[in-house]
Image (cartoon, rainbow over all chains, first blue to last red; front, side, top):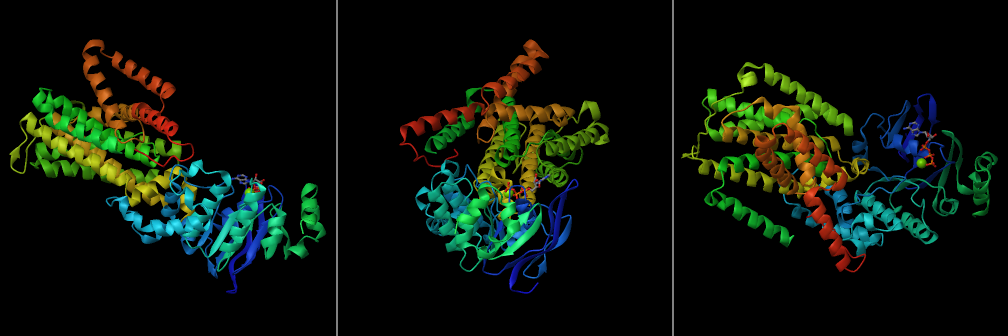
Length: 257
Length: 321
Ligand SMILES: Nc1ncnc2c1ncn2[C@@H]1O[C@H](COP(=O)(O)OP(=O)(O)OP(=O)(O)O)[C@@H](O)[C@H]1O
Ligand SMILES: [Mg+2]
């Protein structure tokens, strides 16, 4: 609960009908760092994210955000504190334009979102900022296109721009490079590095070269339990971690640096 | 967009001239009321993604409230109609509070169960006249002009319906409407952006109930009575049919659907009797199987496809008209 840690969990546990998906996880995320959460499929990474962002209630344990206990809050309330997530599957508003996607995020802070009698032309004042955000992730030229028509990599970029619109203090990214081609991966990695300035990032990532290149600290989750934590060089040598990453992933883990 | 504006201008002109063309005004007024009812329902289903199985409750109870206040309490037309809509909004608030936390089919089930409850109250309550209905509702006057003549009443009803239609368009194209759209498109994402989605859903539910209530109040004024037909489950089903037939999520579709259903009922009921229900059922099945977007929806899709072909590929702009 020191102020150095923006986000902290204590013995966080979530059961699904007797199956423990997240088991007594105590994790501390340092302010201003890029913290990676890795682990094999089904380890409980997404479940852990769902707990942190209140999309799921924990069976037991506590979550602190800047020293405040936020365990019992609602998901929207936690988001308004500045703890904003992305989803494992790209999460956009498919039939809204690319510009509108970002604008609807910008709109919230203005506090006129219940005004059903006002014209949406009132939102035009947000267009400039929305365009800035789109340009910052290199998709400014697609502003008028429907979000659903974007190629996959660009959708993830749009998702990032929408998240950035909220100016979050902490961003939780669930596999931001999943399913991307090589080129998109390096672009998104650069993007994350860029937006990590002045904020904290906790990300789930399977791609070890991405993790190796941008993460300050890594936690390894296996069957709901944290089995290792530390900087990449240290964690990648941990025999337990190597074992957890048996097969192709183990090679990736060893050979990526 | 320009084509749509032109269409509404022509439609408006025709509506204004209709009494001069010798069309029976009471029928057109009835049609307008149901068009408003369907548009109110569509605000919920089409623009917010919530399926209510009990919208008759708002139509019917507002009709009773307006009828009772005007027939027995001496209320004037405007306060009477307004009170009906407000009462429906109040009911919508209660039902909404109970239903909105549930998703999909559970939401629909709760709205249906509560609508049944409201129906039961209407059957039992002394002021509704039970099976006989509430008769002899006066039309009263507005701003000193009597509405006893069909033509005068027609213009009053037309003004209310056109105003409501514009209001719905405004709601959809407002900052609030943008959030509704986001919620309908991707609710978890909307939550993760910090929106308390339940409040937005509740507000649109209340607005939809109020407009459905307004339709009921106007209908009561037009026909001079309120009966159980308007609160029945069948009416909740009919409005779904109207909306799907015309085109859910389009502005004009539900009104067109209402027009078709009411006209069919009017002309067929004398000729084929109870078979009307069967015919409407068949249309419903055809609609679901063959043209899911409804009439207006299919036309728009056709136009969009043509535009996409004409335009260079990849450069199609977002549109929702
Ligand atoms: N709602 C749920 N009900 C029951 N079991 C669930 C639920 N959500 C997740 N689980 C289970 O919890 C375990 C952890 O799932 P989770 O999605 O958190 O894994 P993950 O680490 O994100 O995996 P991946 O790398 O494949 O995304 C899995 O075995 C999954 O089946
Ligand atoms: Mg996952």
